[in-house]
Length: 293
Picture 1 (cartoon, rainbow, N blue to C red):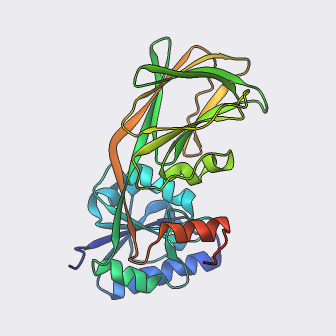
Picture 2: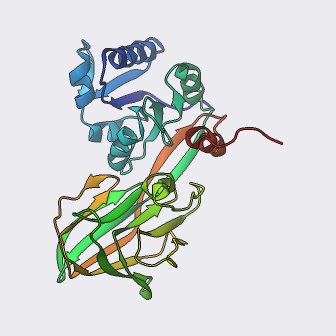
Picture 3: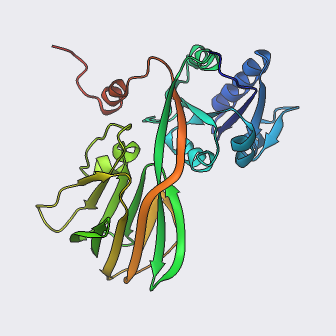
């Protein structure tokens, strides 16, 4: 069945003359196919295209049927944090390095996009997490993440003491450089670099992973994505920071902190081509042996 797609939004940050050419070619190609194409305003400010419709990313989420994000996973994460609040499908054209979220190849994306617009695609819904930060019962802020939340010391090699409760049950206390709460989508992000497990992205689970803990017996814990995590920071000699998908929450905070993390009501609607295979991506991105025996 053909995908009903009247409006297409294009999001990304062109960083070179070659990149600008790609955005322009995509615009003219989709326009010639009869689609109404609109640009996110930051993207449009660099392109200098005439007679194009320019809107905010929020408007793209509200009025478009499909968003095309060009770039790497960083661009995709920033876009998805906004677009998750809308019923819009999102596809990524990879112009970055790893590209776990941006599937389409920058060289031959057109055939895959034609298939998508014809309704030939895999729809992949990914859950997100939300964080709420309190100090002495005073609310300090909140944010959402598709990949992970990271609690980390503001000084290199200075440990934080904290306690973790899962669904109100005490799980463990720890002294470490920090803590990563990762979704299955985010298992191939920062969590992977500090020894966390690779989790198949369609699993509704979350990993809890201390960063460089002060005990050799510490291992990551995998829990249900529906669980509620309460994190209490007991002591930190230096202020520490909280990052949501690599974005600093701008809360320079210290001890006596309560952090609550739970699943949001939002989800992102990623689109993959029909030949999408998650294990192909792992092999290619992580340079695993590609032979079969």
